[in-house]
Amino acid sequence: MDRRTFLKASAVLSSAALLPSWPQFNPLAGPRQATATPVPNTQVAFVKTEDRAAGVKKALELLGFDGAKGKSLFLKPNFNSADPAPGSTHPDTLRTLVQTLQTLGAEQITVGDRSGMGQTRAVMEQLGIFRMAEELGFNTVIFDELTADDWTLKQPPGSHWQQGFALPRPVLEADGIIQTCCLKTHRYGGHFTLSLKNSVGLAAKRLPGESYNFMNELHGSAHQRRMIAEVNTAYQPDLVVLDGVEAFVDGGPAQGKKVNANVILAGIDRVAIDAVGVALLRYFGTTEVVSQGAIFEQEQIARAVELGIGVDSPAKIELMTGDPASAAYAKQIQEILYQ
Image (cartoon, rainbow, N blue to C red; front, side, top):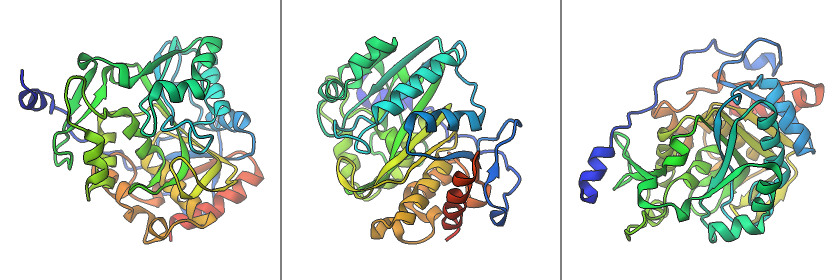
């Protein structure tokens, strides 16, 4: 089967189903304190903290997350480079997330990525991931080392990807997908790199045995930010954790102007997570392109909304907090969501 026929045969992915219409949230009421009631996927746990381990645990507690028991989970971190957080996933965040998922009954956890700025194996080695895997008992996968049969081509309707994009079967065939991302801007055209952009690390740069460079296409396209959103049609995460204890408000993704944002976010809705993330960047003063216009008019977010990936309005985002300091912080960020 030639490449064109394979692509057509693989183009079976339809846009994600539209999310249900949750009751609209009154922004004047402030962030809601957590209750024992199960939460819809438009809610975002918001924890003010300088302690990543405590923050991750608290965020999952606020969400009432219980989607690990008996499952083989794939965990997608940010290993774009070996630069320290927020250039890459902080080891405390990864360690705590793995241990928490194991405590919640995960049968198996696999951690993997494709680095954009460096060789993936060398990046993971430098970050100490293989040592951590041996210590904690999780598996690792390096997307660069997969075979041609390990990839599945996707071409969503209306996609701006000329030849589609390819995602790894070990990810798509997992019982659940967990994602942990950072809080930072992106100076190479993405504008910001949060949960939607982190998904690009799932996509192949090249398919084994072929020369076409998907990432050259992405970074050279006027539709880059729309294409970032389109990768997210290929999967639905069971959980997203954003580590915003430190953030790049300019530069990025590897290095930049760093601030202590002191927050951990968690939820299921990638649009909601990214909208809150952009509001946080604006709160600390960020780049002109990230500061312009309404948050839901940012191209990554607007395209994701078009595709039904997440909520379509800040009115549908609830910030869940569990203490007065987090509630006060969240209220300020919530107000920025509406600007």
